[in-house]
Picture 1 (cartoon, rainbow, N blue to C red):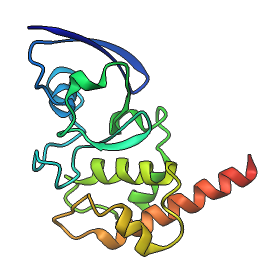
Picture 2 (cartoon, rainbow, N blue to C red; picture 1 turned 90 degrees about the horizontal axis):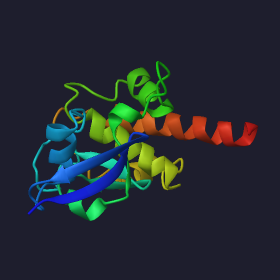
Picture 3 (cartoon, rainbow, N blue to C red; picture 1 turned 120 degrees about the vertical axis):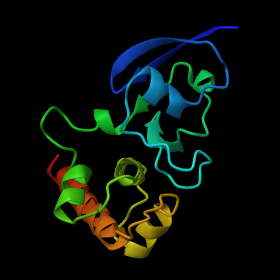
Picture 4 (tube, rainbow, N blue to C red; picture 1 turned 60 degrees about the vertical axis):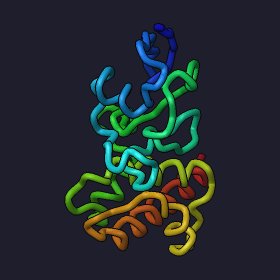
Amino acid sequence: MTLSICLTVNGVRKDVILDDPRVTLLDLLRERLDLTGTKKGCDRGQCGACTVLVDGRRINACLALAVSLDGADVLTIEGLADGDRLDPVQTAFIARDGFQCGFCTPGQIMSAVGLIREGEAGDDPERIREGMSGNLCRCGAYAGIVEAVLDAQRLANEERRVA
């Protein structure tokens, strides 16, 4: 049984034929679309390494069946920057050393972007820690991650005031 779906991935329409309805969004992104920035960590929705935005909301790509996302808009770490201009969250992660080994970083950044866009980041570190609790870092870079999210949230607030 083959199924045809259409996704917009990082702003580009992708028509995909699925040979198996059990293919996850994570495997589709990594194995079929060669977007390997989204990481496969636990493959059980517990670590957050596979976090992407679907229709503007954070999801664990390892838990989402690709077939259920027909017509969806998917944003991965590869689509976050605008050419050479990094997203403010990416810039803040670099400035605040919000990573160590880097394995969890794409999922952490995508979760932070989602948290800010959802209006859930605020300016309280505890609120950010709670909002990011689905993303695990084995290296313990949490202090830098929280500071990066705070910086990116401040920048987003400043940009809203200017606009």
